[in-house]
Length: 104
Image (tube, rainbow, N blue to C red; front, side):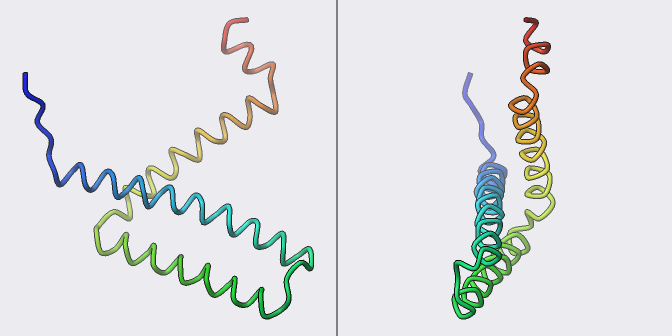
């Protein structure tokens, strides 16, 4: 039985995944930037450059999503990833829950 792949859907899905992963990384970078700024590790000029770079990245990501019509699919995928991460973190923080779900 031959495998049929809709090239447009495949590209749409892969691009949505890549953009979502970049957004997750971007969020981590933003949290780290705030820690460094609040910790006084950066000069005012460095803080401004970092803020400008993160803003440019955010605008570029929005443009990519708009250009390719993937805004809603990225949001859905991002939401799904957030739920998975929340669940994993909850299990790490509450190992008893993990054991209960595993049937131990």
